[in-house]
Image 1 (cartoon, rainbow, N blue to C red):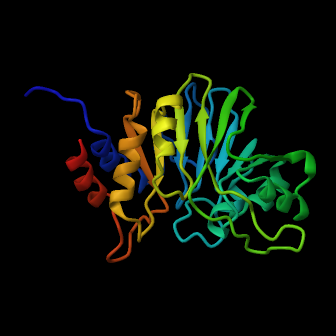
Image 2 (spheres, rainbow, N blue to C red; image 1 turned 135 degrees about the vertical axis):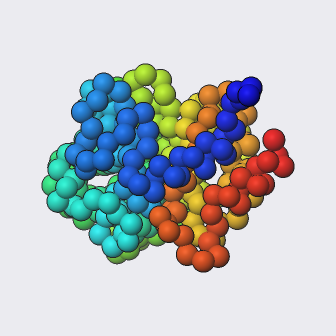
Length: 264
């Protein structure tokens, strides 16, 4: 039988089977401690909480929602190392336990919106630990390049203050590791034509895209189509905002896949 390259959404289906156990990425590790590997590792801890461990052991957390996350596979006590926390917006299920983890570990927090960073400082994360950013910025974090891009979403705060009533713009992140492997974490965005530009400019190898229960499957399929613009690198797609066991009637992976087949 002649072999063939898997399509992006076929990889999407396969990867979710792995994700619903514990881990996906270059390395597989069933322990909750950061992997000690000679290659980068990507782990999913439920909802939109991911951990990236680089080849030199630098640990990045993305949207670390643990408390109240029904699918969290880690507890706060098990998160004892983090160097950077990337927070896409101020919503409770995305900024999650950032404040507690930053205080406990000394991690630096990169906020997708400047105002969200100001709110973190007001909530007593030390100022020197907070990197207040905005879409259009880029940062070199221990040899990892993080580009902040816009997200078509909100950034309301769970405890707004007079000084910081709103989290500013919502964001996504393009994360380029030391080996030039690029991960796009989209945040909770809707599809936007900007993805065509980003696919061409940043050429992600992996896209982590939102697939909440009421997400229009066409929206997700179009994200993939746009990110493939001038980009032969994209071979893997992973969902977030997806329950391990989606509720009845929820948008699941098979529905964007069917639409994707009509767009190919």
